[in-house]
Length: 362
Image (cartoon, rainbow, N blue to C red; front, top):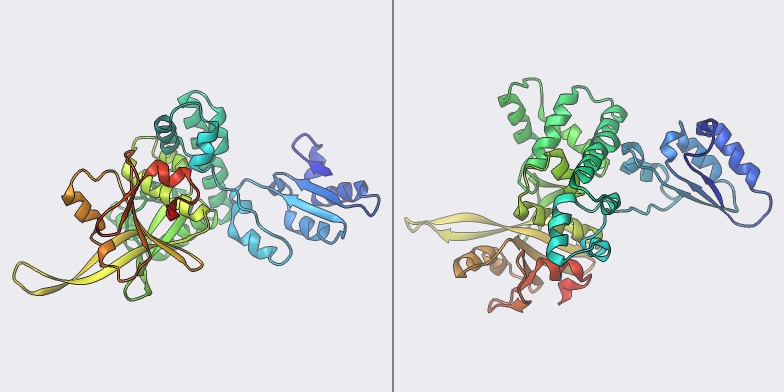
């Protein structure tokens, strides 16, 4: 195995010298495993990897941690010449396996600080907060701005705050641009906002959930919802001042579905309803998530609690109007036994949903 790490001589940050060093270690026809950590520190690392990839008896593993290496264009650049293994933050089930406390305590910790593995090693709240703030700024934000040559850094600063505050809310570049204009930023266009959002998505800091017309079986171009890849990063960006369990729970469920391999949309169900005047009006109801994987589909609602029949009717209103037989689920925050109501809708608690990988089949 040939490995380079930050203890190697700084000269190894030169692309040609790295290549020479690695080749000097390969002395026969056996398979050599080349592990390159923090490869983005090597200027022109793409050419280095292309060169090393020509070594027939080399098996190459590469990791990196800045926005350039995290971005999707790396996969595009090396498509057909390698495989991407995306490492997500810890799932709640993984977090619980190393957390010393109850499920309830673990949920509070996870929904506040997220699943970045280093969080588990931090003991004091201030250590966790500082780690996440620095990670957001240095690994993500500074690199995104630098790599994309973005002008007006304060625009990106404000945008990530808005997206953090409104995670899971319907929005679009036009609406966001108007917010900037209304606050004195006259030169901010919807095209600028769309470009900045694409940069955040490309660096895997946020994800976009499109709206899908369930009955019409078509996508609706706008608005969309945006979720943070890790709720700890989202909370850190807002200085841990907006701990809203309902929105955080929705974000965590969305991330869990993505990690399980589902494509996830926001569902729209249209129906006709009589108004107070007796006239027919077209209404739209929303399903928090439509999760698809192969032939599987699940409709999922996220809510803090269902204390009474009125709340139940509110949460299931969109689900009962979906004209197909795919499973419909309501996930609640409080610990309650798994059950199915008279409408055929399954109600499960957040622990049941997150701690069992096949919970959707229960």
